[in-house]
Amino acid sequence: MDYFLMRKDDVITICDISESGEMISWSEKMRFPELAPIGFRTQRDYLKKWWEDRRAPIGQGRLRTILEEHGISDPADYLIQNLGLSLTDYYWMKPVGSHLKWKDVNLFENAFSGDALQTYGFSFRHKKNFSGLTPNSSLQGELEKCWMIRHGKRCLIKGNHGKLSSESINEVIATEFHKCQKYDNFTKYKLLPIKNKPYEYGCYSRAFTGSHREFVSAWSVLTSEKKPSGMSNYEHLINVAGGHGIDTEQLRRDLEYQIVSDYLMSNTDRHMENIGFLRDADTLEFIRMAPIFDTGRAFAAGSVVPYTRNEIENIEVNSFRNTEAELLTLVRDPSVVDMKRLLPADRIAELYGRDTKMDEGRTESILRLYEEKQKLLETRF
Image 1 (tube, rainbow, N blue to C red):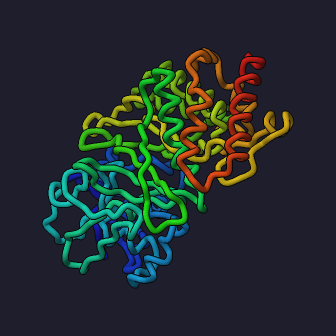
Image 2 (tube, rainbow, N blue to C red):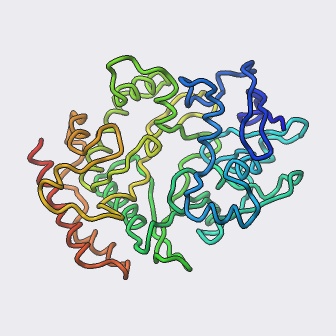
Image 3 (cartoon, rainbow, N blue to C red):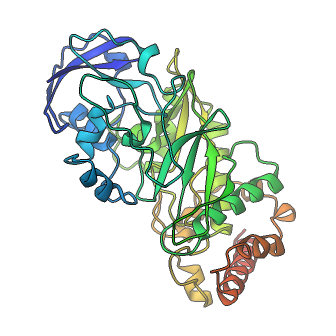
């Protein structure tokens, strides 16, 4: 089937999409090439890669099972059934011959279903009935999650791996940490009781995108331009973002704050999809680094808490560098985090105490890790 790749109501190009949702081909004769997605432009057939990367991963929560129950072949099929719509940007697929407009389908303004981790709000429709669209088909990450409208606001609901509520509680810990620091650019999370799950609490946050601001991942930025020989991904990211209008000194400060705060909370999963930028919908200029989000893997969530000094000094990370210690070498100004304004350990213990399945011994190990990190940071700088 032929679809127009759209940005709001602007046609970018025409694409041939298979019945199972795979992109077969696309026309390189673009009507508005400047509006095309920026990710993967250093690769051949980059739009195919972009479309493939847009689908929700099959390992996300119970996605595989739910798709099978509804006769959907795979996430690509689910994505095209929902016109590739997202709550992070303005791209979508318009069937050639249809009279659909952005105002008819965009999920920033039109209602959609969501069910707080019960059924993921899946709303399957007949091919000719363009109602009941959902943004969950383009939702990224392996963690169980879904978009829903809560109290009139677009919110992301997230669960946990396993029986503990640690990942959700960690998001709230990070929220309170940033509040203590009086930092002005972070996503606010709140706990949410969840029924019929192994864990007791999920968490939710409001979307930081909207009708006039979209999200562009760090990965998209890194793959939009060829990296000069000898340049690190860190500097490449800053340089390319600067070319899109961002204040690079503010960006460096935001990145350094994120590195130091992640270090203190032992967040090891700050990969390039967990960092990004807000972009103006009209000018396409980058505004600022996106509010810090996804700190759920802090404090060794889902694994053994590092205990010995050697273990703590050699924690591996998924980020710009391979270890926390190596990441800290990128920081020019450690005072971006005020050590006199740290979240108190007893508040962390209180939050973990809300999870009745959380072992007290594990909480004690986490608090010890938090204390050791503070000592090590003060020694390093």
